[in-house]
Length: 459
Image (cartoon, rainbow, N blue to C red; front, top):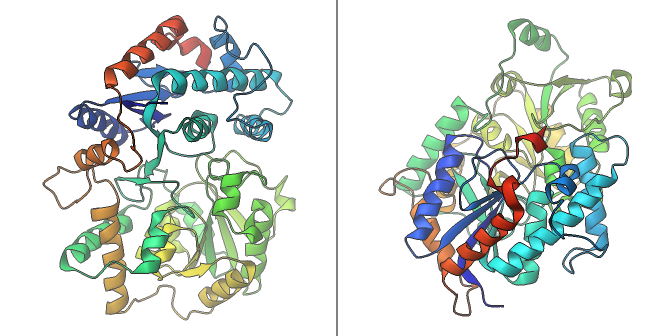
């Protein structure tokens, strides 16, 4: 199939001004080269000609697609297996905390899958972008892109006020691990300068894009009375990383087999910290709706749960245990003794206590709890290595949002050029206008829902 000069972004986030600016500037960038950027969203964003906006809930899609002939028969598109279909249905029930089987979820997924198939078959995008391979708003597009031969790129917010783009993913699949294994970035004045600025920002604000409420003074006073060492354990957004579902392929890729069960991992960390008389400060991700313990009595006695105040918790704790969370970055930059899973990007710099199995985790926690001081004072050589690593990430690997004349070698304009000149394009591409015309036809056949009258189906 000959593809068009179009880039299809699946479910891009417009949560804040930085993200909105990223997508609008990327659109302007690719249009300079005669390409089009098309956004397929299941979020509350303003409808425009290059956007298709659907409800977020699968259970609402049968009504949304009521007049369209999607999924009239029970078969699935050939790129979607029955096992993956069931995995997404189960995920959707957990996401919205649907306690009884809702058959409209499966019905909505069937219709959405055929809609995605139609988009790829008609629009024929040369490139597909997603921010994960978990929720249906992204996962279906990733699978269809593989089937139809569209080049794929993973795009997501970085630990800084910037974006990362990878060929497959941001953890075990990240190119950073391969690059660092071959040779760490050389220590240069420019990288150190940028790295120091990154460290300063991470020390100032560990929350990044997602601002959290501060802890109250009485909460902090209570936490200070708990048995030390205090080990902060900030959980990942487990549904969106594949950790929550035991059989999710993304979870299998990113998490070592010893830690595939979230509850068992929490219990193990509590046991290891308990050997040293300490307390685990368990902090769930702000978007995490999973329930790991039925009651307080069901939870290990040396575990307390905290909802907010990441910056204060990092200042308070004596150590930190991290898996894929970006919290590992500010923790290490602040000198917090940090155990970090080997698939986390920052594990590549070698300054955390990296682990990939239970034995290594045990040694990491023992090392942290055995330190005489609450903070690690890195040597000049270690600081140079950290600054060069972060400077390379921020200035050369991640996509900077600053003006192109600033320090960044990769910015929105250079990203636009990268995407329209990928090595995967081995055949001539057809004009972008063909994709735009097909996109308009799809929006037209979807009727008034796709044109913005979607508030009622979000209720």
